[in-house]
Length: 341
Ligand code: P6P
Image (cartoon, rainbow, N blue to C red; front, side):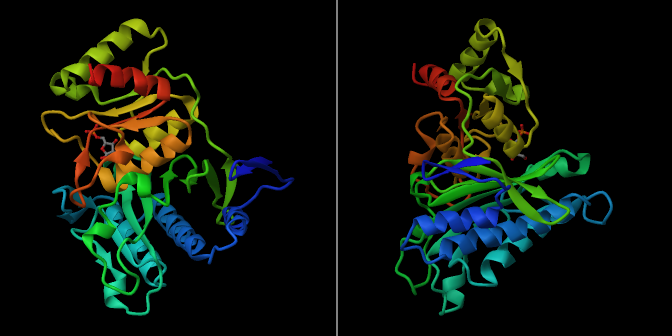
């Protein structure tokens, strides 16, 4: 098995686990306290617990609506709420982070403010279960997370500024894809690595070392039902590509993590443009667009909104939405030439 740590090629005869990978990376940073590794360990544990429920969704009374709605006004699926609780508990019970923001919670959760002995400098923003409307029909769903260092002083209550940081300030980002297999993919800014769960022993093994998006792509992931209200520039781009790209093909699962994971491995362009129902775009900047943009860029691709690089956007509120286009650099550059023409 060959993989890369901080750009240096590593080789091992055995399948390396996520835990071993974290230790190898931690040893690279001599000043490391192990605090960051604890955050990934907590996310890994929560992912296994959510995976266990997702895989049995049809068998236990956990499918279907929870009866409440989240701040987005979206009806909460039972698994949404379950996943939210699992990740929040995994991150806060051991005070591994000083704060968390979740798609399923109106405001951020300040652990620092509640427990004075929280030394952690990390905050996590998370979409506990993206694509949850697909659960009942057995389509893959995902968790998306973004990790920052707090900007306010250690030991003081958190402020919104700790959460409203530009995507370029992320320390790490990742996703878990609960699909035909369960994959944990993350970056700390030194490339992207994917780990597949062996459910028999509950261990994630390095299966996708140094993920690099293919330089060429011909897959377009977009909900064409909204075409009529797309911006003119996006309409022209899609129309021209259908005529010019002989290998043009549409692949749209309707679950962002699945669509972008496939495009990372096969090449392709994911598009969620503004439309009549969602004039700002649908996807949330802080815990969907930013983490996926960080990962796509680290894999050699690009991620933009209608106006700028996703990671350069200055957030103004926790649950703000953004138009989102990401994938092969060549395809994003071609789209950008239409957006800014
Ligand atoms: P539409 C799922 O609900 C989600 O948030 C993303 O995972 C997905 O890419 C998008 O919405 C699908 O939205 O409007 O095409 O159904």
